Length: 267
Image (tube, rainbow, N blue to C red; front, top):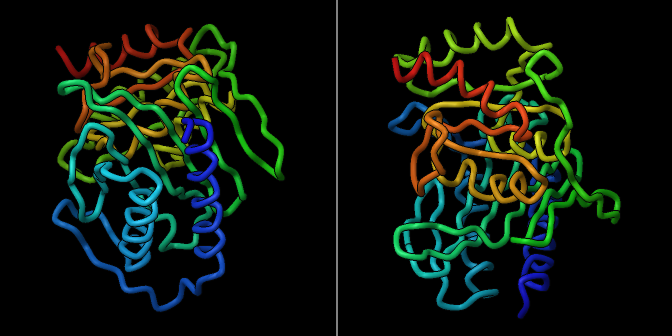
């Protein structure tokens, strides 16, 4: 099976999963609190199990790393976030996603090959295949994605995230204040996967957050890179596999955005 054929299978799977999620009654959801104070529902767990089983059928002998339960690393590994934005989902907000990435481990380096992010409430599917561009599938049309052409923060709307560890709140709010004074506006939308896809589609120009896990950003990272954007840690270094302080942008504002994060974080 080619990467393109495999990507289409993943898209179809996420379309079906999104439809099922929309049809389900969100009342009386069983909700649990994890050790990091974030929330998980029974739907997260059910979708994770479904996707894990189906994706491994598509690519036998592949591994799965998922937010809620699974860590099975192999040369070719699926990274799954069954519901990114669970808190939004619980409260009836329409900004949440289902995120799947297939990548290859070369030593300790994870190289994304396919990234798919579904936005169930709007029937949007963002997707990318390495070296083949990034696209939005909407109403059976495939729209090629490209980042905004903004050159400075003063031309931009950006987004940011709040860490679950509230002891780190100043670490995000202090640089955010500096950035908002130099940009058109900063929004708190979420989740991370969709904010990064919004950069890929040119809706916003930048995004930054602390302590993102690999399932939060891996699929969206490929979509952003294939649309012409840039993503690094807060020191400007390449994203390593695992937890990262992430900054993503259209590329042209990246150094300016980093300047205010680096000054705060590393001084």
